[in-house]
Length: 79
Image (cartoon, rainbow, N blue to C red; front, side):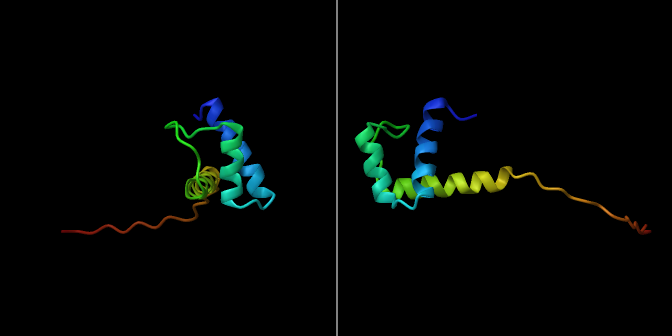
C-alpha cells in the first residue's frame, strides 16, 4: 500500500523522468511545488535517483512470472 500523497509524488517523478529530465531538475520542480519528502525535507538529486531506482526495482518484482514444471524424478537413498 502506498499513501495517496506518495503516489502523487511518484507519478510526478516518473513522468518527468520519462521525459528525460535530470534528477536535479526533478528535485527543483518538486521543491517549487512545495512537495516534501515523507520525513518533511526538501528533495535533492541523489534522493530523486534513489527513489526512481527503488520504484524500478519494485516494478520488476511485481511483474507476474509464469513457472512451468515438467517431469519430476525422485531417487530413494538407503542409509
